[in-house]
Length: 220
Image (cartoon, rainbow, N blue to C red; front, side):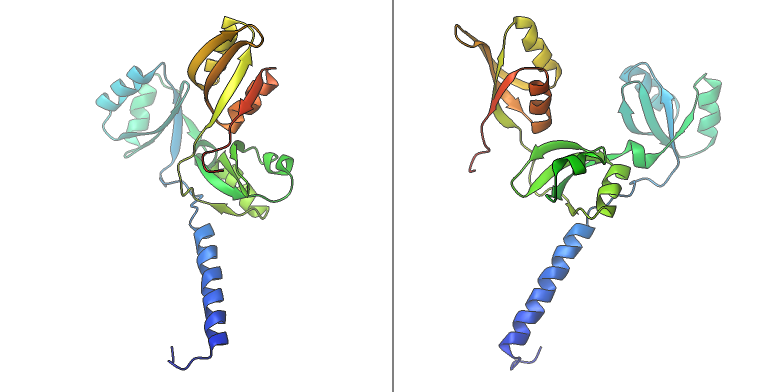
């Protein structure tokens, strides 16, 4: 760039570069499956069965296990015949429905519109949502004009206090995956659970009729 460039020109060029960098950051969210091989699904009993399969069948690459569903790719199609010979029923799986990501979505409009895509809100921040969705759902958000970006910090749960009435309720809270620190009994409030929970867990707790108070994140 010429040394005697006009200051206004320098400001204009800097603005264009900032916009370009911002757009590039948005494009960095990769919504394509990491593995281009066909994805298959079989039913398995547990992780031990998966370990045995991997030991016996070199080239079977586990991609994800969800409940009794094992999603995998193979290096050779001969392995598919071997699995059938072992009595497994193979089903093709859509990687865009199977693989998921957690991303930031800039806030725009009402939350209800965002949820129509099927994504799950992990946390609500001042200027963006942190959501989890499969690749199809996230592509739908992008097509609807939402701005998606990769996480730049670890997603943190909020410190919470949860009021419950009976000891059985403590187990119901634990079943939601809430991190429980302590449980204390009080005359006025029954049982009070101190712990940490993400916003989607807080939503579920309130829907179950529990009273939840959540502290803001440190520094906010």
